[in-house]
Each structure stands twice: as C-alpha cells, then as structure tokens.
Image (tube, rainbow, N blue to C red; front, side, top):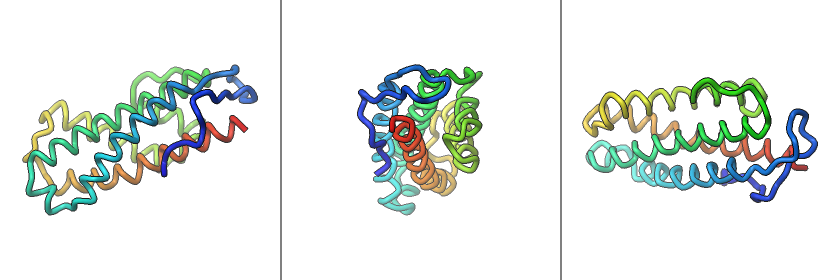
Length: 164
C-alpha cells in the first residue's frame, strides 16, 4: 500500500509542459520514503506507552520522520523538475507547488508543511531531544503515517494518470 503502481521506466509524453520523461528520481525517493515510513509505522504500532517510556525509541522514530520528510521534499522537487513547473524557493515551497498543480489536496499539503516544520524545528533546536514532549511527538508521528501514506498515493496516482 502506498507505493506507486508505475515502474521506473515510465514516461509521460502527453502531459502539457512535460517532455517525454523518466520519473526514476521521483520513484527512487518514493521507495526511500516507504522504507522510512515502515520504520515509523513500527514505532506507532508499538504504541504510545512504549514510545513515551523509551527515549531511544523516540529518538530513532523521530530521526526516521526527519528522513521521511526529506525524501518527501526531494520527491516533490524531482516531480516539479520533471514537469518543468515553477522552481521551488525552498523545501516547503515544493509541497505548495504540488498543491497548486493539483497533485495534492490542500489538507495534505498543509499537514506535510506542518510535519516538515516540526522535523526541522526539533532537529535544529533540540537535536531530537528524546525527553522533549514525548506525547506530542507520538501524536505527530502517528499523524505522519497517514499523511505520508496519502502523499505516496496521490503522487503515485498522478504519475500513473499521466502515464496512461
């Protein structure tokens, strides 16, 4: 679930503004995102009690979230590049462009921007301090599973739609 139904040799010759293109970079980032997402799912499935009780588990899960957000942004940037859409100014802008281009609904875009801000803020300020608000971090982690899975589905659908 969540992985796009398109192989790396896919091309999109009929998309306005898109030359015949190979989405391999987008697909590679989505595959890497899925790997990180699986690790996050494990942490969420183990439950909040274990997450709160184990600083090491929290730090590990939050690092997976940071990496997952990075793969999300990189897949968005790659898709934007392949589509010859407006170049994003920063990581958050890449997500907003996908919303503007109707690849993602606004609610997913807002959630992903919030996750990216959360990951950046916590990594820069606290270095993933395992003791910082474990309950809130678990809630964000749980939210990330749903949002990142939906992101994969929407991007996969976009790629498949334009491939067909």
